[in-house]
Image (cartoon, rainbow, N blue to C red; front, side, top):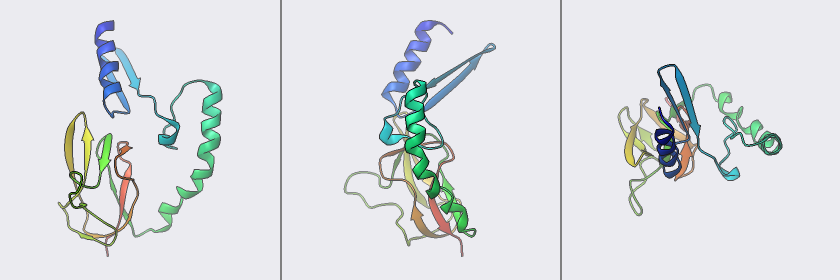
Length: 155
């Protein structure tokens, strides 16, 4: 892969909502990560810029860690997870109905949200049947692969 191809990939990543891209070609591995603003910092993946900002980000992220263990307390709840990196949307467009709200009963195959990845809008269907008890992601927020989006009570 030549430098022009790498530059084109960097431009593509910067224009999209892709958080990270890894390419392996003929024994060479290239990983491109998009910078994230501090307000979008996710505890599980912090950007690497320099040692001082990372320490500051770690200090900022520490108070949010007590909220993460709150998920395992409810053993009977199942998480609907993101199958891809992209931008999470609760509705198909402005003024359109929200796909799934807290308290809604969902069936297997029901569309619960949309994730935009590389200018493609992907409908995300539920793989579980139950009642939505919590929406874990705000509308129009970036999501990572396998990130929990909803908590569902299957009973």
